[in-house]
Image (cartoon, rainbow, N blue to C red; front, side, top):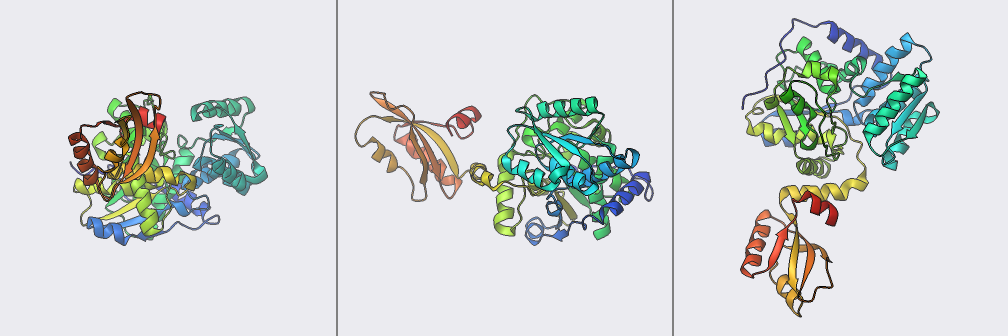
Length: 427
């Protein structure tokens, strides 16, 4: 597969680059540029010069702060004393809360009732008395509609997380800092959710570093840009896997798509959610870097980009977009990472109801196989009973060998590891 085409070049800087430079200057009294750090582990692994732009180290641990501060500053210059409304279950809420407190503005943040308490508490911490949190609806779309209705009825400023020109300008300050911190990279790897960050970066670098190329990464269960590129216009995905909650967006923003439409589906990487979990664990355990799922997308894409021949010998910047990770989710992350690695599987085993049957099954396990889950699903059967069994091991080949031994023993079993419905219901 060919390397993604660069954005069509423009000479020198340009009006958008000038606006981004102004936005970056306005941010400097509030927080320092985030670090651009070379990562030896990834550089050695892929034979490239790989750098991490650490947006997980902003005051609110994500790049969303940039867009919120930029858009609010511009809005208050036009309408002093304006009130603000947004809808968010995560990073944008915290960015707007921080901006309200910084500028002395008042804001209302709509969040789904199902939002984890950790995110609600952090938003309150950043906003203090400057924000009011309204819990409304079970899903984000319900919160969004309520926020937009309130903004219209009250005359407040609705602050979109990505479909706003000033927000896009603010997010592009990530690229402004990258260019100030070193030479223009050969390749920038960007996560894509609603498209504000990627659109801003693409516009900026088209003016300041037209030779830089891009790889855009979406979660496989929320690939709204991929769908829009295939259709030629933004479309709404019928379902979204919300695990990568910072980037799982059902519909790419209209304004971002105006810039991102120049890409083609082959320019994108679709990151499976379970693989993202493995990337998160490696960065935590090996590098000591805490990333949320969306924050790990750019790093997760490197293996696929290497397989396409797009990394070797190049200078690559991965934007780590956020580190707001709730450690209560760590068991789920570990579980999904193990499934991706092929070292954990779940079976429904049909065992005969007689003495010694369970012992016979246990004797089929290998020396590195461990039972992580055992539960009778039906205890009233006279001749056979169904058992849910989770097996952990050290290498995928061990589970393949176990399958062979089960087959040779004539046992009746079903692997439900990849069955979404049964897994969610039983596990």
